[in-house]
Image (tube, rainbow, N blue to C red; front, side, top):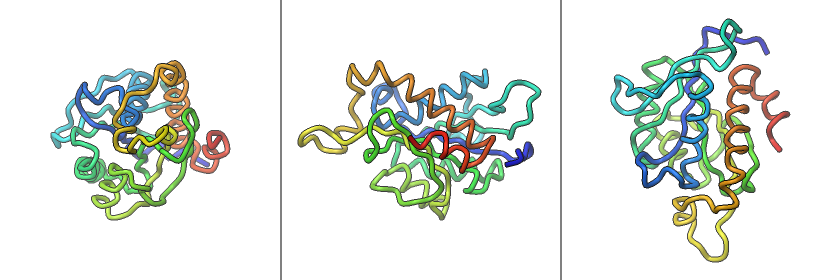
Amino acid sequence: MSTDTDAVWLVVGLGNPGPSYAGNRHNIGYLVVDELASRMGGPFRAHKTGRADVVEGRLAPPGAPAPRVVLAKPRSYMNELGGPVKALATFYKVPPARVVAIHDELDIAFGTLRVKLGGGDNGHNGLKSMRSSLGTGDFHRVRAGIGRPPGRQEVADFVLSDYSRTERKELPFQVDSAADAVACLVEQGLERTQQQFNS
């Protein structure tokens, strides 16, 4: 796939703002965009829409051809983040097909990834809000597995709880892999990314 270096991609980390949510399973999207921002060497800054923090740059070494990327952390809670995503997509003129949502996925084991285009929201309030605001579900998803809650724990309590001590040791590897998948997706396309990362 040839790289369109004029194309802009909007990469959104799904999560809830504020320190009390920072270590939650539901906030894996924030962790991944933080890693990507670190690779791009830029700090997050408030966007002029006032509803998200963003970093702009490219995910390739300096001088290498690569599309422009806008990393975003909406300031809204999960069930309302579609509004800020829509505002950013409009501002940067990004069609849904170049929007990437990074989110937690209950139906995938912890430590594994799946990348896809489109699909349902599977009860995920962040995806539901994005679909509603964008008017379509045809955006890319980088799905970071968190597995199902143990025993009879409610799903809502599980996703809003912190990773276990054992998981926290493995988490950096999952975050790193998800960040690699995003870079592969914007630079080499969906098919190549799925071949490499859909473990």
